[in-house]
Amino acid sequence: MLCACALRAQNLVLALMGVTLVSIPVLPQTPSADYSLAVRTHLTRGEAELKANHQEQALAEFNAALKLDSGNPEANVGVGLLSLMRGDCDHAELTFHVALKRAPASPEAKGLLGVCEKRKGQSDALSLLETGFREIKDPNLRRVVGIELADYYYGRGDNEHAVPVLQTLIAINPNNTDLLFFAQHVYQDMADDTLNRLALLAPDSARMQEAVAEHLVNNGDLQGAIQHYKKALVIDPYLPGTDYELGEAILAVGHDPDSVAAAREEFQKAVHIDGDGARVECALARILDIEGRSDEALADYRRAYAMNSSNSEALMGMARILISKEKPDEAVPYLEKFLDDDPLNADARYQLARALKELHKTNEAQEQIRLFQEIRASKDKVTQLYRQMNKRQATDNTDGPDTSQ
Image 1 (tube, rainbow, N blue to C red):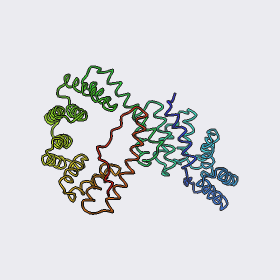
Image 2: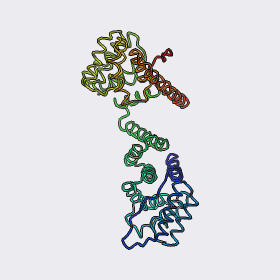
Image 3: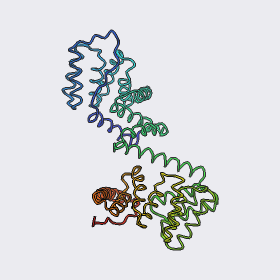
Image 4: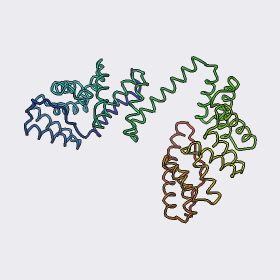
């Protein structure tokens, strides 16, 4: 039995077909096929009506073509697609089979036939869906077939195969909310499955304690997380990555002298166990900055940047300190590089506005403030949604905008 997400995915396919499918591709034709001008005219009109989502008119044109050539692959796929959009898999299946008699290699007919056979529980649905997803060129048809293929894998509990399909679809359609919703369920199921397996295999292990701590961090219970990180390190004092995570949790609780000292100790242990790296250098730089030792912090951020020029914390850390030292001209390139990778970061937009204002680039600074305000408003909405879900949403450590700009 498919879960609620899988059932929603089935409804999603219908929605995609009814709204976003805009054309029927030209299918392979045998050299002996005799297409009259009248047939071609009806097919062209049918495709135009389908593009405009005029389903009744499109169906009339495809049926008119079939009266002249009952085996025409394009017309049969068009009629089958319209039947599928209306939930009539039986009729759609018949028309796709007719299309495949004339064009047996057609990935479009195979893929859409796979959609029908999946819904009817036929055994060869998987191979048809896989062929269609692999070979169809039209992005809308490929999305329809791909969602059904991912849902087929998901329904069988085969997330390892579902994930690459979803990753491909999201890469093509990064802002499709239905795809993102489906993927979120798959990824959450995978996370839950791996955590359950870890709990069964090693409930008293250091990694289990670390997993519990990470879960508590995500839910905002930092004090609880700290205790479980410490339990993990009692079990295995050399557990890779754990000292760094513990230091981050301690520092997130507060910046009082005891917390800062404890966090520094954990970060220094992380260097000893995991080796030096941009991540730890940035953490140590952050502590120096908290202590007011900005010159030393800047030097550490520069070391982190030399290790990894794409490290976002290094870029932002250098920019903040340079602005505070009245060196906005040096800060701007780091902020622009940061925004190339993360254009929706409100903090970076605000810091860039500060730097541009100090450089007397008023119009550019005002544009950055406008973007800052738009991004912050959107993130506030997300924060409210997370609160409704009883989840903790991290907030940016950003000062309010300088309204004098």
